[in-house]
Image 1 (tube, one colour):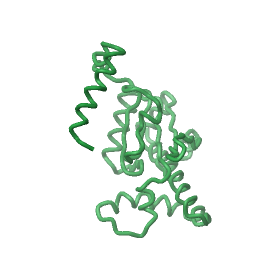
Image 2 (cartoon, helix red, strand yellow):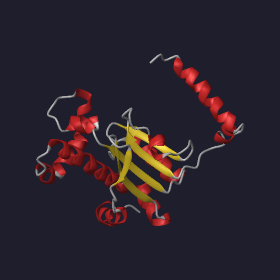
Image 3 (cartoon, helix red, strand yellow):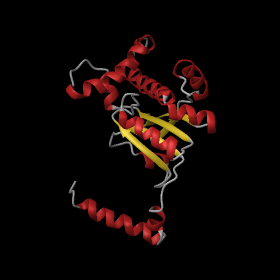
Length: 208
């Protein structure tokens, strides 16, 4: 890729928007009121707005390696705080994807230096669900199942936060777990029972 082409692409994109609506950027600059907080993977093949079919301003997006929500990560916690407490989003989506490099790396016994503490969060998910995962003989199926279980566990981490608990009680915010299937291009809803999880989690993690 010629990096200079990006500016040419940008000019063409700007013009394409203005050709449809001459006030497009004026309206965009007035502020944002997204309905969705999307937490996804940094993988270059997985673009949040495209796979959801949403326009700028409709989704507040946070991405990191393997769509993690560690409660000790100030970046993730700040994003959730701002999106839920200030932007008042109605939905929080954690979206993983099959053939995730971060999940694959966590399944292997390799010293990856700085990545080790980050991947340890995924290995903790593996440990928590070890019996189920070790019962899957096919490596690819086990890999894909860990992707799904990781999404579910990150949804639980979202629910543990004070902002989401308060928003659940005051306005019924919803938490969703999805997986993007790169082979088909389809989004898969894992049908996370967030209200039941919320009830169970709040027995221990309840915050006023």
